[in-house]
Length: 213
Image (cartoon, rainbow, N blue to C red; front, side, top):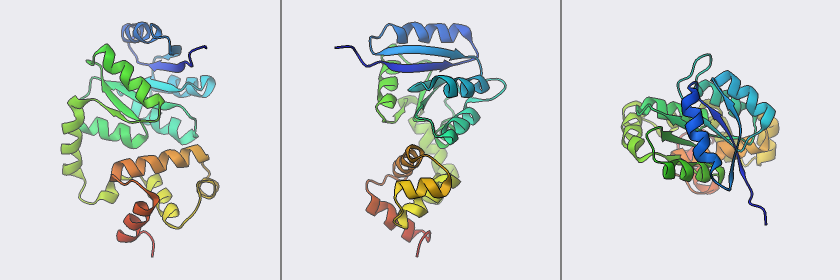
């Protein structure tokens, strides 16, 4: 039986970095690198053309950085999941990438094993965060977030309110002009950010914070 391959797009402005990660990834029987981008704008265009399963993307790139590129990609509703790969340990970068829609954040100093584990986890719909940046993320949230609702983007707050109003994913998608997949992704990020585990808990949170009557 053929192995189901994870189709990966690499985005980094340094060709040496792309070459190194391509070698690691293509050595795996369940992974295929379908393209490479040298900046965020090219990454957005190539995601639209190739529809990869995973976009492994640097955070700081010329023309369009990884944060803005992630926002644009997520906004289109494509199924591609973004895994940030960066030298930046600062919690601000991690927070902004996650807010933009990235499903994971991995440091470039990671081991080959960590890279492969992160790609497989994100491909499976799970989140991945390098242990080295976890404390920075928590510290950054403590400094900048006094109300848990502030963890959510404007779009996530919209989705949360509609969920609390008992709208279905299809109804929410139609009202906001999104795909059902994007609504599901927003719902997942809301639950992850707020550490909630069911629709009932989402509704209780929304009521408690005055989002619905």
